[in-house]
Length: 314
Image (cartoon, rainbow, N blue to C red; front, side, top):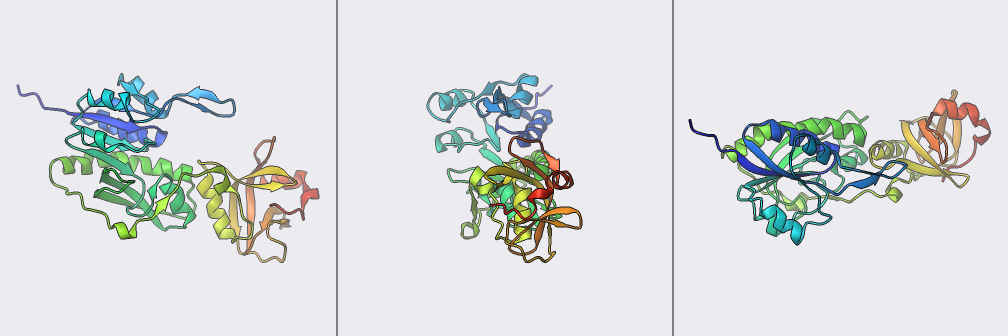
């Protein structure tokens, strides 16, 4: 009996978003996943408990070797090259893959990227799509080179956006799309049925790693823009402002074109609902959390803090 050759494959990934793609590789009889490369265990949660990344947890459950270098250099590169991978699949790994490593896999390094390239190269493509109010996004299967999301694209799948997505919800809905491309588009590429096409680099846009300051609300912006910010930061770092010097997290909000003549940032009550005046319209606060307190509905906050109406958030 002829034994079917399985492709020696290394998977590079870290967060929960990457797990469905790894699962698809493991369960597809064509690939032999010989190792997983993931970010090191990091402190997580309010108690800062050192926690393994989701990809590591899945890999160890399946008995797959896990490598967790702080950086891909020196000994880590040697260790990966010694495994003699034929193919590598990368999904939200979190570090640039050096050229010397890319050249070590004869069938290439294939990346699953959650945007419609060349738009939104970089660290936060899902968040960027929400911030910009895009009507669609998607997932691209691409060949890595030594640039940031720069290599040729094998295939893309488009996903329509309804306008109420958050980064957290969109991550969950796009993850299985990338996993499906393992079984179809990646297989067709390896069989020569799909050819990777260079990107139009003149149309490339970049998005940076999100930091806490990026989540601060500017109440002079329109209510629509601020609502996008709140949704975009859900799953990253909560949108925030300050009230009497205390941090106030805005976890859910709804834009309204309700007119008012208040200074942007002013807490107002509209038909028994808590809202904030903005540069254009107002933002109803559906869920918020004052520093040191618990998250609560806007209605509950209003009932307990009517004395704060007229205060200005900054």
